[in-house]
Length: 291
Image 1 (tube, rainbow, N blue to C red):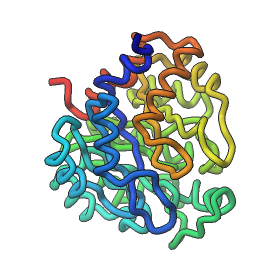
Image 2 (cartoon, helix red, strand yellow):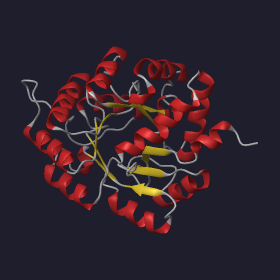
Image 3 (cartoon, rainbow, N blue to C red):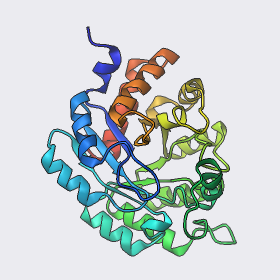
């Protein structure tokens, strides 16, 4: 008899998977290997992520080779990928990027922590999206407008809570409908993270809250899955998505990780309907696959 997680994974979507190659870290799978594994477990769709380059071209090639899995590209605005560059964002989005992530490991809120926790001395200054007066940089406003005009997803990356709130307020006020608060509760790579009260406030504002399994499965420090369970219950599954944030060499392939994540959440008291909402319904809406 199939396990519950085997049934729930069929048709699921993982919007946050790191792929090889990457210059500073070994990754578990390249884009094609990932798509094959996703097909084996029945995933409906995946979003390819890489800190150092846009993944749209890879996604489109993989889509032709593995048509059973809807494979999408993204761009992460870290220093290596060009930073907060509206022109680059516009190009990637026009080519088909489904997600634009604000800076992650090279964000000012993350760069020092990544050096201490992972030994990664990344290039450039720590990136901030606010000026000295606490308002958004003009190029960030321009990026928000590009994302809004193309009706795709904006992820908050590894920004500080202050930056997140200013960014989300501007994005939602501009009419952007698809804002995701990136892997909340993940303090392994950020100096300051959102509190549960702040997470609830962001959900009430209209942002979608992302919970990732890497938060509980990594070689730095692991958050008890019960912390995620309680946060989901507080925020409400209707406001959340589940991702793995996998791709690390010391973790299983992301599709296998997602099955384990679902099992852990079920054991923690999240019911099947809530999981279906977070791993199918909500990500499908974000990727505009529900029409």
